[in-house]
Amino acid sequence: MSEWARRAHHYLNSTGRFKNFKKMSEGQRYEVIKEGLLEFIRGNPIGEGEVEEALEWFIANRKVHEARAFAKIMGLKVGRKR
Image 1 (cartoon, one colour):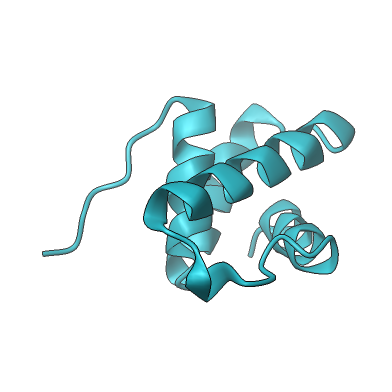
Image 2: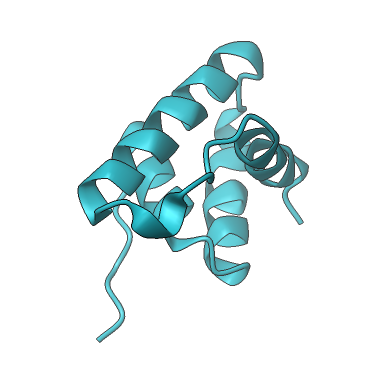
């Protein structure tokens, strides 16, 4: 389990990033998550070995928006489920 990813999700939740999340468009959701993750990364840098583990944690825990934004920030790709 990725402790970093769990803490990042908790940070996004506790700072109110998910407030009115269901009323936002997909683009707005992406931007809110991206800004929150960038803010969290500045204060809590992630090691290179933890990046894949964190991405897997987001996907395994069905945090799709966070997984996509995190992958984009880190220069990775996340496949789409069809």
